[in-house]
Length: 138
Image (tube, rainbow, N blue to C red):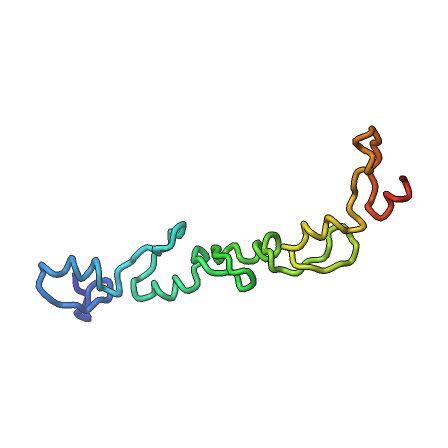
C-alpha cells in the first residue's frame, strides 16, 4: 500500500513488477524488519540498521584483547575478571605476589601462604599449616 507521499507504508519507494516484489522485500528492501543473525539475539530492526546493530550486539563474538579467546561481547568483563589467563591478578593467598592468572597454579606450588599437609601425613600426621609455617611443625 502507498501513503500520500507515494511511498509504501514502510517508507520504501521501490517500484517494479509485482512478480519481483517478494524478492525485493526478502533480500533488498532497507525498510523491512529483519532479525539479527547472531546466535541468541532476538532483536528485530530495519535492514538498513542491521549492520549498526550487529556492530554493537551483545551476542557478537569477539576475541579477548588479552588472551585472544573468542567470546560473546556480553561476557568480556566477566571473562577478564574471572577466567582470562592473561589478566594480572594478586595472589589469592595474600602473599603479595602479582602474576598472570595463568601462572596461579604454578605459583600455588611454591606460595608461602598456601595451606599444605604435613610431609608426614602418610605416616598419620594430620597437621595442616601454611607452607611457611610447616617447617616449625616438623
